[in-house]
Amino acid sequence: MTAKVESWGSRVGLILAMAGNAVGLGNFLRFPVQAVQNGGGAFIIPYLICFLLMGIPLLFIEWSSGRFGGKFGNHSTPYILDSMVKGRLLKYIGVFGIFTNIAVVAYYCYIESWTMSYMFHSVLGTFTGMTQAEVSAFFNSYVDIGHSTTGIPYEAVVFYVICLLINTFILSKGLSGVEKVAKIGMPLLILFGAVLAIKALTLGTSGASEQFPDANAWDGLNFLWTPQYESLWDLKVWMAAAGQIFFTLSVGMGTIHCYAAYVKPKDDIALNSVSAGFMNEFVEVVLGSLIVIPIAAGYLGLDWVKENAGFGMAFQTMPYLFQQWGEVLAVIAGVMWFGLLFFAGITSSLAMGTPWMGFMRDEFGWGRNKGAWSFGAMALILGLPTVLFYQQGVFDEYDYWAGTVSLVVFAMLETILFSWIFGMNKGWREITSGADIKVPNIYKYIIKYVTPIMLIIIFLGSLFKPLNNDWTGNVSSLLAGNGWNLDNGSIIKTITHAGIYEQIATATDATQIAALEDKIFYLNMARFLLVGLFLFISLLVFIAYKKRVKEGRATL
Amino acid sequence: MNSTALITMLLTQGIVTGFTVYFFYLVLSTPPKQEPDSYEDNDDELIRKND
Image 1 (cartoon, each protein chain N blue to C red):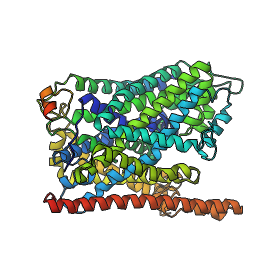
Image 2: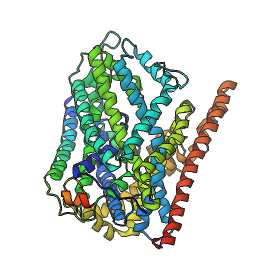
Image 3: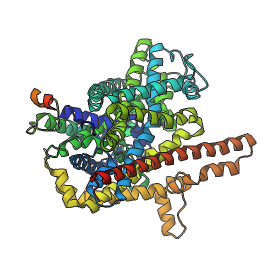
Image 4: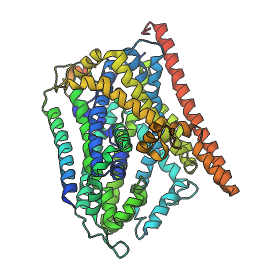
């Protein structure tokens, strides 16, 4: 018996849920840092080109694939792909579209739980009177689970479990629960972001202090937006821009397919997809660039920002900066900033639950509750090692394989399948069918040729990432016959733990060597869990296939 | 803030905001398709009951 198929409440709800899926912590933390490190204002040129040539095409592909699969009652990528292409093995490519979500949510909820905890600490006034170093040290003690900052034992674990419970509870309410959160969370996120951006824009030199006499918020914006046109000739900048577009839109995950699978064949997906895509760009380019960098430059100066720009600023710097606004405003700003990050996080993590729930309902008739709580249980089992062994690198290992490599592999394969195996003629019909806007014909050729090539380049770029990320230098070296030197961050060298072995070879302290060897053990354990999850989902897809054969529903 | 940076920022943010508002306006102003469509909120009470 199959459980009743759900549907979206309203078109605006669907678009807000899709935009919420795309808008994440990276919009506020990754984008400005990438821009600063890759040519400032000039970064926006490759960034917007990649958005038009890769981002929008991928949105079209995923929305139309999802709606196509939904016609046949499929709401997760294994059988969405199965309905599009013939071949028994191709459905296993779709396993990525469930695997990635469960693996990513396992550690993503941990970051989400930090935002909850930091909101709580902002209200309690924990950061009042702390120096910048103390705020930074607070974060380190927070992720050291043996240490409690509130008196609650295993505080980080408690917040993580609460966060997972909230996600699971909302998911158990089905699409209507997800839609409600998006309808509340997205406007609040934009409101909080706008308030903080206005504050940043009006900060000027008022934050300068004896320690940082040259601090000026406008210097931060100058640095972020002054175009350095020479950087346009650097391949590294193009790779960074393509990577940012890729991750910011949440493509290659399977969540867009799943959401779009609930759209009926005659309804629009073209306008929906560009509307949700541009909403994400608004949050990233407009709000994301106007908060962290100018506020940090306004109090700590541009030199500090240049040296310290990174993900850690959200938790290790911002609470200190808010203290400079006085006690009451510090609480309000803290709640707004971490609230904004929380909404950005939860609208994404909820999306990650839906492919699993859709798959289990389609194939095994599981209801919302069973689907949601089984998802929560899997996320907990996989996520606890990232919480308990955060400092041993388990968190980063998940992020690398599930949150980076897996996305690129799936997006590359699905694009090739869509353009070349499903076929661009059928694909174009799917994209334009029911469209409320005229999709420019040029996208037919972009999707067929340009997007797959860009994705193949990104994949090969990750596989063979050059030493020090110096693309121009390494291409010259290769052309001169001096070979291609791989970076330790390339997929090939990461697999073999080359970077850690290099550290072991140069280390002289026995304790340090032992710690590095332990780290390899923890990283291998993380990989074992991820591979185990992938195989488990593949097995379920196989069992579902056998069940379909028995019921006469199999496509081949 | 220097004028090049200011122009780059305003131009980029203006374009992105303009497209975002334009597409969202289109979403809001496009009449819904004939029932049964994908969305529950605009269903007749009868359709919802039968579901």
